[in-house]
Amino acid sequence: MLLCSDGSYYTGWTTDFSHRLQAHISGKGAKYTRSRLPVKPVYLEYVEDRSHGLKREHSIKKLTHIQKCQLIDSPSNQL
Figure (cartoon, rainbow, N blue to C red):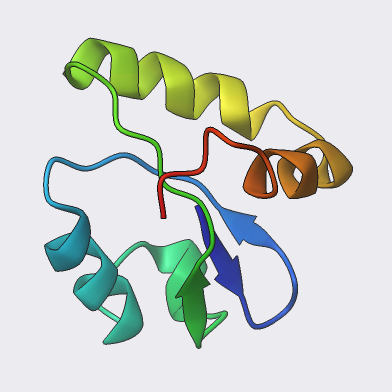
């Protein structure tokens, strides 16, 4: 999860976190983050495969802003 300059969170999945983060920072990532630069990584969670990653992304996107803040402060944050 990335914290955007407007205080919103962007959630996505990737197989290469460093590469994807650099794409977002340079403005070549998702359209959502391009208009909300700069971005900062605030939450990272590793899962076993793409299927689990997509399901986890979907469940995180359903969370409220407050719930996302709690997730960032939780022990499951691997940043």
